[in-house]
Image 1 (cartoon, rainbow, N blue to C red):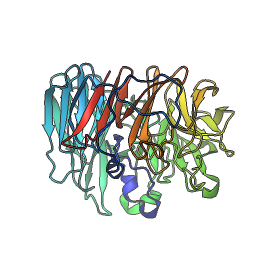
Image 2: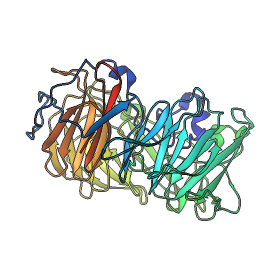
Image 3: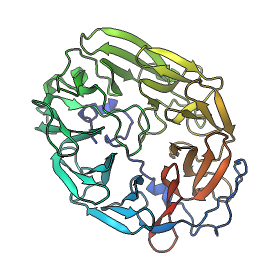
Image 4: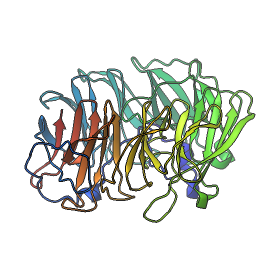
Length: 469
Protein backbone atom coordinates (compact mmCIF):
# COMPACT_ATOMS: atom_id res chain seq x y z
CA UNK A 1 0.00 0.00 0.00
CA UNK A 2 3.01 2.28 -0.07
CA UNK A 3 3.28 4.86 -2.78
CA UNK A 4 7.01 4.80 -3.17
CA UNK A 5 8.25 8.37 -2.96
CA UNK A 6 10.80 7.58 -5.65
CA UNK A 7 7.89 7.79 -8.10
CA UNK A 8 6.84 11.20 -6.82
CA UNK A 9 10.15 12.89 -7.59
CA UNK A 10 11.03 11.48 -11.00
CA UNK A 11 9.39 14.11 -13.22
CA UNK A 12 9.58 13.04 -16.83
CA UNK A 13 11.09 9.70 -15.82
CA UNK A 14 8.03 8.76 -13.77
CA UNK A 15 7.42 5.20 -14.74
CA UNK A 16 4.19 4.16 -16.32
CA UNK A 17 3.06 1.78 -13.64
CA UNK A 18 -0.11 3.03 -11.96
CA UNK A 19 0.67 1.24 -8.70
CA UNK A 20 -0.26 2.23 -5.20
CA UNK A 21 1.42 -0.62 -3.26
CA UNK A 22 -1.71 -2.68 -3.13
CA UNK A 23 -2.30 -3.28 -6.72
CA UNK A 24 -6.02 -2.77 -7.40
CA UNK A 25 -7.55 -4.29 -10.56
CA UNK A 26 -9.58 -1.20 -11.40
CA UNK A 27 -12.23 -1.31 -14.09
CA UNK A 28 -12.31 1.15 -16.97
CA UNK A 29 -15.23 3.54 -16.53
CA UNK A 30 -15.07 4.74 -20.11
CA UNK A 31 -15.19 1.18 -21.41
CA UNK A 32 -18.13 0.47 -19.12
CA UNK A 33 -20.01 3.27 -20.83
CA UNK A 34 -19.95 1.31 -24.08
CA UNK A 35 -21.82 -1.64 -22.60
CA UNK A 36 -25.24 -2.04 -24.18
CA UNK A 37 -28.46 -2.50 -22.28
CA UNK A 38 -29.39 -5.88 -20.84
CA UNK A 39 -27.65 -9.18 -21.13
CA UNK A 40 -28.56 -12.39 -22.92
CA UNK A 41 -31.15 -14.77 -21.54
CA UNK A 42 -29.37 -17.44 -19.49
CA UNK A 43 -28.87 -20.69 -21.38
CA UNK A 44 -26.71 -23.76 -20.64
CA UNK A 45 -23.02 -22.96 -20.97
CA UNK A 46 -20.90 -24.43 -23.76
CA UNK A 47 -17.80 -26.52 -23.23
CA UNK A 48 -16.64 -26.37 -26.84
CA UNK A 49 -13.24 -25.03 -27.83
CA UNK A 50 -13.15 -21.22 -27.77
CA UNK A 51 -13.49 -19.19 -30.94
CA UNK A 52 -13.90 -15.50 -31.56
CA UNK A 53 -17.50 -16.08 -32.67
CA UNK A 54 -18.77 -17.97 -29.61
CA UNK A 55 -21.86 -16.22 -28.21
CA UNK A 56 -21.35 -15.16 -24.56
CA UNK A 57 -23.92 -16.68 -22.21
CA UNK A 58 -24.66 -16.13 -18.54
CA UNK A 59 -25.69 -18.86 -16.18
CA UNK A 60 -27.86 -17.61 -13.31
CA UNK A 61 -25.76 -16.23 -10.47
CA UNK A 62 -25.92 -17.70 -6.96
CA UNK A 63 -26.76 -14.18 -5.84
CA UNK A 64 -26.39 -10.61 -7.00
CA UNK A 65 -26.18 -7.31 -5.13
CA UNK A 66 -25.92 -3.63 -5.98
CA UNK A 67 -22.38 -2.66 -6.95
CA UNK A 68 -20.33 0.21 -8.39
CA UNK A 69 -18.76 -0.33 -11.79
CA UNK A 70 -15.20 0.87 -11.46
CA UNK A 71 -14.75 -0.33 -7.86
CA UNK A 72 -11.82 -2.44 -6.71
CA UNK A 73 -11.24 -6.18 -6.98
CA UNK A 74 -13.45 -8.64 -5.12
CA UNK A 75 -11.92 -11.33 -2.88
CA UNK A 76 -13.11 -14.28 -0.79
CA UNK A 77 -11.89 -15.18 2.71
CA UNK A 78 -13.54 -18.28 4.13
CA UNK A 79 -17.30 -17.72 3.97
CA UNK A 80 -16.99 -13.94 3.49
CA UNK A 81 -16.90 -12.06 0.17
CA UNK A 82 -15.15 -8.69 0.26
CA UNK A 83 -16.85 -6.21 -2.11
CA UNK A 84 -15.27 -2.74 -2.24
CA UNK A 85 -17.43 0.12 -3.49
CA UNK A 86 -16.53 3.70 -4.39
CA UNK A 87 -17.51 5.13 -0.99
CA UNK A 88 -17.90 2.03 1.19
CA UNK A 89 -16.19 -1.30 1.85
CA UNK A 90 -18.71 -4.10 2.38
CA UNK A 91 -18.22 -7.72 3.44
CA UNK A 92 -21.08 -10.07 2.57
CA UNK A 93 -22.00 -13.67 3.28
CA UNK A 94 -20.66 -16.03 0.62
CA UNK A 95 -23.75 -18.23 0.58
CA UNK A 96 -26.42 -15.52 0.45
CA UNK A 97 -24.82 -12.16 -0.42
CA UNK A 98 -26.26 -10.72 2.81
CA UNK A 99 -24.22 -7.86 4.30
CA UNK A 100 -22.12 -8.84 7.32
CA UNK A 101 -20.19 -5.63 8.00
CA UNK A 102 -19.05 -2.42 6.31
CA UNK A 103 -16.78 0.58 6.52
CA UNK A 104 -17.78 3.90 4.99
CA UNK A 105 -15.37 6.38 3.48
CA UNK A 106 -13.64 8.66 5.99
CA UNK A 107 -11.47 10.80 3.74
CA UNK A 108 -13.32 13.66 2.07
CA UNK A 109 -12.74 13.55 -1.69
CA UNK A 110 -10.73 10.35 -1.30
CA UNK A 111 -10.15 8.17 -4.33
CA UNK A 112 -11.20 4.75 -3.09
CA UNK A 113 -10.22 1.79 -0.96
CA UNK A 114 -7.19 -0.49 -1.06
CA UNK A 115 -6.74 -3.67 0.92
CA UNK A 116 -4.48 -6.64 1.55
CA UNK A 117 -5.51 -9.97 3.06
CA UNK A 118 -3.26 -11.80 5.49
CA UNK A 119 -4.79 -15.00 6.81
CA UNK A 120 -8.07 -14.07 8.52
CA UNK A 121 -7.21 -10.36 8.67
CA UNK A 122 -7.60 -7.59 6.12
CA UNK A 123 -5.63 -4.34 6.12
CA UNK A 124 -7.96 -1.68 4.73
CA UNK A 125 -6.83 1.79 3.70
CA UNK A 126 -8.26 4.74 1.82
CA UNK A 127 -6.30 6.14 -1.09
CA UNK A 128 -5.32 9.74 -0.55
CA UNK A 129 -6.64 12.63 -2.59
CA UNK A 130 -3.16 14.21 -2.51
CA UNK A 131 0.26 12.67 -1.99
CA UNK A 132 0.84 14.81 1.08
CA UNK A 133 -2.31 13.50 2.80
CA UNK A 134 -1.99 10.72 5.39
CA UNK A 135 -3.25 7.22 4.58
CA UNK A 136 -5.81 6.07 7.14
CA UNK A 137 -5.88 2.32 7.69
CA UNK A 138 -7.23 -0.33 10.01
CA UNK A 139 -6.66 -4.04 10.52
CA UNK A 140 -9.98 -5.90 10.55
CA UNK A 141 -11.06 -9.45 11.37
CA UNK A 142 -12.74 -10.59 8.17
CA UNK A 143 -15.21 -12.97 9.83
CA UNK A 144 -16.55 -10.47 12.39
CA UNK A 145 -15.67 -7.00 11.12
CA UNK A 146 -13.97 -6.20 14.44
CA UNK A 147 -11.11 -3.69 14.24
CA UNK A 148 -7.89 -5.03 15.77
CA UNK A 149 -6.02 -1.70 15.52
CA UNK A 150 -5.84 1.39 13.34
CA UNK A 151 -3.41 4.18 12.54
CA UNK A 152 -2.25 6.45 9.73
CA UNK A 153 0.89 6.60 7.61
CA UNK A 154 2.27 8.38 4.60
CA UNK A 155 3.02 5.04 2.94
CA UNK A 156 1.82 1.58 3.81
CA UNK A 157 2.97 -1.95 2.88
CA UNK A 158 1.78 -5.38 3.95
CA UNK A 159 4.05 -8.42 3.72
CA UNK A 160 3.09 -11.72 5.35
CA UNK A 161 2.19 -11.03 9.00
CA UNK A 162 3.73 -7.56 9.02
CA UNK A 163 2.47 -4.04 8.38
CA UNK A 164 5.13 -1.52 7.37
CA UNK A 165 4.37 2.13 8.14
CA UNK A 166 6.43 4.89 6.54
CA UNK A 167 6.13 8.29 8.23
CA UNK A 168 7.44 11.44 6.58
CA UNK A 169 7.97 15.06 7.54
CA UNK A 170 7.79 18.05 5.17
CA UNK A 171 5.94 16.01 2.53
CA UNK A 172 5.87 17.69 -0.86
CA UNK A 173 9.01 19.70 -0.23
CA UNK A 174 12.73 19.20 -0.85
CA UNK A 175 13.18 18.76 2.91
CA UNK A 176 11.07 15.59 3.13
CA UNK A 177 12.49 12.93 5.45
CA UNK A 178 10.97 9.45 5.88
CA UNK A 179 11.40 6.54 8.28
CA UNK A 180 9.83 3.08 8.21
CA UNK A 181 8.75 0.83 11.10
CA UNK A 182 7.61 -2.80 11.03
CA UNK A 183 4.50 -3.69 13.05
CA UNK A 184 2.96 -7.04 13.94
CA UNK A 185 -0.26 -7.32 11.96
CA UNK A 186 -2.20 -8.91 14.83
CA UNK A 187 -1.81 -6.16 17.42
CA UNK A 188 0.13 -3.29 15.82
CA UNK A 189 3.15 -3.61 18.10
CA UNK A 190 6.41 -2.27 16.69
CA UNK A 191 8.94 -5.08 16.23
CA UNK A 192 12.17 -3.13 15.59
CA UNK A 193 14.18 -1.26 18.23
CA UNK A 194 13.95 1.90 16.12
CA UNK A 195 12.59 2.96 12.71
CA UNK A 196 14.75 2.47 9.63
CA UNK A 197 15.69 5.58 7.69
CA UNK A 198 14.04 5.55 4.26
CA UNK A 199 10.89 4.55 2.41
CA UNK A 200 10.12 0.87 1.95
CA UNK A 201 9.81 -0.19 -1.69
CA UNK A 202 6.54 -1.61 -3.00
CA UNK A 203 7.65 -3.64 -6.04
CA UNK A 204 6.67 -7.30 -5.84
CA UNK A 205 7.36 -10.44 -7.84
CA UNK A 206 4.26 -12.52 -8.43
CA UNK A 207 0.57 -11.92 -9.05
CA UNK A 208 -0.89 -11.77 -5.55
CA UNK A 209 -4.18 -10.00 -6.30
CA UNK A 210 -5.41 -8.99 -2.82
CA UNK A 211 -3.29 -11.44 -0.82
CA UNK A 212 -0.29 -10.09 1.08
CA UNK A 213 2.92 -11.42 -0.50
CA UNK A 214 5.25 -13.38 1.80
CA UNK A 215 7.76 -11.44 3.87
CA UNK A 216 11.34 -12.15 2.84
CA UNK A 217 14.47 -11.75 4.99
CA UNK A 218 15.31 -8.47 3.24
CA UNK A 219 13.23 -5.81 1.51
CA UNK A 220 14.35 -2.80 -0.57
CA UNK A 221 14.33 0.62 1.06
CA UNK A 222 14.89 4.01 -0.61
CA UNK A 223 17.48 5.90 1.43
CA UNK A 224 19.50 9.10 1.41
CA UNK A 225 18.79 12.77 2.02
CA UNK A 226 16.19 14.41 -0.16
CA UNK A 227 18.30 17.50 -1.09
CA UNK A 228 20.58 15.12 -2.99
CA UNK A 229 17.77 14.76 -5.50
CA UNK A 230 15.81 11.64 -6.44
CA UNK A 231 18.31 10.60 -9.11
CA UNK A 232 21.06 10.40 -6.48
CA UNK A 233 19.02 8.72 -3.76
CA UNK A 234 20.02 5.04 -3.78
CA UNK A 235 18.34 1.81 -2.74
CA UNK A 236 19.48 -0.43 0.10
CA UNK A 237 18.27 -3.66 1.73
CA UNK A 238 16.67 -3.66 5.18
CA UNK A 239 16.68 -6.80 7.34
CA UNK A 240 13.05 -7.51 8.18
CA UNK A 241 13.95 -9.23 11.47
CA UNK A 242 15.87 -6.28 12.95
CA UNK A 243 15.32 -3.15 10.86
CA UNK A 244 19.06 -2.92 10.16
CA UNK A 245 19.79 -1.25 6.80
CA UNK A 246 22.64 -3.02 5.03
CA UNK A 247 25.51 -0.78 3.84
CA UNK A 248 25.45 -1.72 0.14
CA UNK A 249 23.79 0.75 -2.23
CA UNK A 250 22.14 0.36 -5.64
CA UNK A 251 21.38 3.12 -8.16
CA UNK A 252 17.84 4.40 -8.62
CA UNK A 253 16.44 4.24 -12.16
CA UNK A 254 12.80 5.02 -11.22
CA UNK A 255 11.61 1.57 -12.31
CA UNK A 256 11.66 -1.66 -10.30
CA UNK A 257 13.72 -2.39 -7.19
CA UNK A 258 13.73 -5.83 -5.52
CA UNK A 259 15.57 -7.64 -2.78
CA UNK A 260 16.40 -11.26 -3.56
CA UNK A 261 18.20 -12.60 -0.54
CA UNK A 262 20.86 -9.95 0.11
CA UNK A 263 20.91 -8.97 -3.55
CA UNK A 264 19.47 -5.63 -4.59
CA UNK A 265 18.00 -5.86 -8.09
CA UNK A 266 17.39 -2.66 -10.05
CA UNK A 267 15.89 -2.32 -13.53
CA UNK A 268 16.21 0.37 -16.19
CA UNK A 269 13.58 0.29 -18.96
CA UNK A 270 14.73 3.42 -20.78
CA UNK A 271 17.82 1.92 -22.43
CA UNK A 272 17.67 1.10 -26.17
CA UNK A 273 13.94 1.69 -26.25
CA UNK A 274 13.59 0.71 -29.91
CA UNK A 275 14.86 -2.76 -28.96
CA UNK A 276 12.49 -3.02 -25.97
CA UNK A 277 15.54 -3.65 -23.76
CA UNK A 278 15.25 -3.79 -19.98
CA UNK A 279 18.60 -3.60 -18.18
CA UNK A 280 19.04 -5.50 -14.92
CA UNK A 281 21.74 -5.11 -12.28
CA UNK A 282 22.32 -7.03 -9.05
CA UNK A 283 24.24 -5.40 -6.17
CA UNK A 284 25.37 -7.20 -3.04
CA UNK A 285 23.40 -5.60 -0.20
CA UNK A 286 26.22 -6.03 2.30
CA UNK A 287 29.18 -4.88 0.21
CA UNK A 288 27.71 -2.79 -2.62
CA UNK A 289 29.65 -4.77 -5.23
CA UNK A 290 28.02 -5.69 -8.51
CA UNK A 291 27.18 -9.39 -8.68
CA UNK A 292 25.91 -9.45 -12.25
CA UNK A 293 24.29 -7.37 -14.99
CA UNK A 294 22.11 -8.54 -17.85
CA UNK A 295 19.31 -7.52 -20.19
CA UNK A 296 15.87 -8.91 -20.92
CA UNK A 297 13.20 -7.43 -23.18
CA UNK A 298 9.56 -6.45 -23.30
CA UNK A 299 7.07 -7.64 -25.90
CA UNK A 300 5.72 -5.62 -28.81
CA UNK A 301 2.17 -4.56 -29.49
CA UNK A 302 0.55 -5.82 -32.66
CA UNK A 303 -1.37 -2.60 -33.12
CA UNK A 304 1.65 -0.33 -33.63
CA UNK A 305 4.79 -2.42 -32.98
CA UNK A 306 5.58 -0.33 -29.91
CA UNK A 307 7.42 -1.84 -26.97
CA UNK A 308 5.71 -2.95 -23.82
CA UNK A 309 8.31 -1.66 -21.38
CA UNK A 310 6.87 -3.40 -18.35
CA UNK A 311 7.60 -6.78 -16.82
CA UNK A 312 3.90 -7.17 -16.04
CA UNK A 313 0.72 -7.96 -17.96
CA UNK A 314 -0.74 -4.47 -17.59
CA UNK A 315 -0.09 -1.15 -15.85
CA UNK A 316 -2.05 -2.39 -12.84
CA UNK A 317 -0.26 -5.65 -12.10
CA UNK A 318 3.08 -6.47 -10.44
CA UNK A 319 6.02 -8.22 -12.07
CA UNK A 320 5.13 -11.68 -13.37
CA UNK A 321 7.10 -14.47 -11.74
CA UNK A 322 7.57 -16.49 -8.58
CA UNK A 323 10.30 -16.40 -5.95
CA UNK A 324 13.51 -15.15 -7.57
CA UNK A 325 12.38 -15.91 -11.12
CA UNK A 326 10.66 -13.44 -13.42
CA UNK A 327 9.00 -13.78 -16.83
CA UNK A 328 10.32 -11.64 -19.67
CA UNK A 329 11.00 -11.78 -23.42
CA UNK A 330 14.20 -12.40 -25.40
CA UNK A 331 15.56 -10.01 -28.03
CA UNK A 332 13.67 -11.92 -30.75
CA UNK A 333 10.34 -11.79 -28.87
CA UNK A 334 10.29 -15.26 -27.28
CA UNK A 335 9.07 -15.71 -23.67
CA UNK A 336 11.75 -16.59 -21.15
CA UNK A 337 12.11 -17.28 -17.45
CA UNK A 338 14.99 -15.35 -15.87
CA UNK A 339 16.60 -16.10 -12.49
CA UNK A 340 17.50 -13.00 -10.47
CA UNK A 341 19.77 -14.97 -8.15
CA UNK A 342 22.18 -16.02 -10.88
CA UNK A 343 21.46 -13.43 -13.56
CA UNK A 344 20.83 -16.14 -16.14
CA UNK A 345 18.00 -17.52 -18.27
CA UNK A 346 16.31 -20.66 -16.92
CA UNK A 347 14.50 -21.51 -20.16
CA UNK A 348 13.37 -19.98 -23.44
CA UNK A 349 10.06 -20.94 -25.02
CA UNK A 350 9.75 -22.19 -28.60
CA UNK A 351 7.25 -19.64 -29.96
CA UNK A 352 7.00 -15.86 -29.84
CA UNK A 353 4.75 -14.23 -27.27
CA UNK A 354 4.46 -11.86 -24.31
CA UNK A 355 3.77 -12.94 -20.70
CA UNK A 356 0.34 -11.91 -19.38
CA UNK A 357 0.17 -13.65 -16.02
CA UNK A 358 1.74 -16.47 -14.08
CA UNK A 359 2.02 -18.38 -10.83
CA UNK A 360 4.15 -21.20 -9.44
CA UNK A 361 2.69 -23.64 -12.01
CA UNK A 362 2.03 -21.85 -15.26
CA UNK A 363 2.79 -18.84 -17.45
CA UNK A 364 -0.03 -17.36 -19.54
CA UNK A 365 1.27 -15.84 -22.78
CA UNK A 366 -0.35 -13.67 -25.44
CA UNK A 367 0.86 -13.75 -29.04
CA UNK A 368 1.43 -9.98 -28.87
CA UNK A 369 1.56 -7.61 -25.90
CA UNK A 370 -1.88 -6.20 -26.69
CA UNK A 371 -3.77 -9.04 -28.41
CA UNK A 372 -3.51 -12.39 -30.17
CA UNK A 373 -3.74 -16.10 -29.48
CA UNK A 374 -3.35 -17.27 -25.87
CA UNK A 375 -0.97 -20.02 -24.76
CA UNK A 376 -0.27 -21.62 -21.41
CA UNK A 377 3.33 -22.66 -20.69
CA UNK A 378 4.60 -24.98 -17.99
CA UNK A 379 6.60 -22.76 -15.64
CA UNK A 380 9.15 -25.46 -14.86
CA UNK A 381 10.10 -26.27 -18.46
CA UNK A 382 8.69 -23.51 -20.68
CA UNK A 383 6.89 -26.08 -22.83
CA UNK A 384 3.51 -25.13 -24.30
CA UNK A 385 0.63 -27.02 -22.69
CA UNK A 386 -2.04 -25.56 -24.98
CA UNK A 387 -2.93 -22.66 -27.27
CA UNK A 388 -6.29 -21.17 -28.23
CA UNK A 389 -7.16 -18.69 -30.99
CA UNK A 390 -7.41 -14.97 -30.27
CA UNK A 391 -10.64 -14.60 -28.23
CA UNK A 392 -11.12 -11.16 -29.79
CA UNK A 393 -10.34 -8.91 -26.84
CA UNK A 394 -9.87 -5.24 -27.66
CA UNK A 395 -6.18 -4.28 -27.97
CA UNK A 396 -4.14 -2.02 -25.71
CA UNK A 397 -4.87 0.26 -23.91
CA UNK A 398 -7.92 -1.80 -22.93
CA UNK A 399 -6.84 -4.05 -20.09
CA UNK A 400 -7.28 -7.79 -19.99
CA UNK A 401 -7.86 -8.99 -16.45
CA UNK A 402 -6.48 -12.46 -15.72
CA UNK A 403 -6.58 -15.00 -12.90
CA UNK A 404 -4.72 -18.31 -12.71
CA UNK A 405 -6.57 -20.04 -9.88
CA UNK A 406 -6.81 -23.73 -9.07
CA UNK A 407 -7.47 -25.65 -12.26
CA UNK A 408 -8.80 -22.63 -14.14
CA UNK A 409 -7.46 -19.80 -16.28
CA UNK A 410 -9.85 -16.84 -16.29
CA UNK A 411 -9.49 -14.00 -18.78
CA UNK A 412 -11.75 -10.95 -19.05
CA UNK A 413 -11.98 -7.73 -21.04
CA UNK A 414 -13.99 -5.94 -23.73
CA UNK A 415 -14.53 -7.86 -26.96
CA UNK A 416 -13.77 -5.72 -30.01
CA UNK A 417 -15.75 -7.51 -32.76
CA UNK A 418 -18.90 -9.52 -33.33
CA UNK A 419 -22.36 -9.44 -31.80
CA UNK A 420 -21.13 -8.25 -28.42
CA UNK A 421 -18.45 -5.86 -29.62
CA UNK A 422 -17.48 -3.40 -26.89
CA UNK A 423 -19.12 -5.49 -24.19
CA UNK A 424 -17.06 -6.94 -21.34
CA UNK A 425 -16.68 -10.70 -21.61
CA UNK A 426 -15.16 -13.24 -19.22
CA UNK A 427 -13.91 -16.63 -20.43
CA UNK A 428 -12.93 -19.57 -18.21
CA UNK A 429 -10.49 -22.16 -19.57
CA UNK A 430 -9.49 -25.50 -18.11
CA UNK A 431 -5.87 -25.09 -17.01
CA UNK A 432 -4.85 -28.59 -18.07
CA UNK A 433 -6.43 -28.77 -21.55
CA UNK A 434 -7.37 -25.22 -22.59
CA UNK A 435 -10.97 -26.29 -23.11
CA UNK A 436 -13.42 -23.42 -22.68
CA UNK A 437 -15.48 -24.21 -19.61
CA UNK A 438 -17.72 -21.16 -19.45
CA UNK A 439 -18.28 -17.69 -20.85
CA UNK A 440 -20.06 -14.70 -19.33
CA UNK A 441 -20.99 -11.14 -20.20
CA UNK A 442 -19.61 -8.93 -17.44
CA UNK A 443 -16.46 -7.30 -16.12
CA UNK A 444 -14.17 -9.81 -14.42
CA UNK A 445 -14.08 -8.55 -10.86
CA UNK A 446 -12.54 -11.49 -9.04
CA UNK A 447 -12.04 -15.24 -9.32
CA UNK A 448 -11.03 -18.22 -7.22
CA UNK A 449 -10.70 -21.95 -7.68
CA UNK A 450 -14.46 -22.38 -7.25
CA UNK A 451 -16.00 -18.91 -7.62
CA UNK A 452 -16.34 -16.00 -10.03
CA UNK A 453 -17.41 -12.39 -9.46
CA UNK A 454 -18.69 -10.25 -12.34
CA UNK A 455 -19.64 -6.58 -12.41
CA UNK A 456 -22.61 -6.10 -14.72
CA UNK A 457 -24.56 -3.10 -15.95
CA UNK A 458 -28.23 -4.07 -15.99
CA UNK A 459 -29.18 -1.14 -18.24
CA UNK A 460 -31.78 0.05 -15.73
CA UNK A 461 -31.31 0.63 -12.04
CA UNK A 462 -28.10 0.06 -10.07
CA UNK A 463 -25.17 -1.91 -11.40
CA UNK A 464 -24.81 -5.44 -10.08
CA UNK A 465 -22.18 -7.74 -8.67
CA UNK A 466 -23.01 -11.29 -9.75
CA UNK A 467 -21.46 -14.13 -7.71
CA UNK A 468 -21.08 -17.53 -9.39
CA UNK A 469 -19.90 -20.88 -8.07
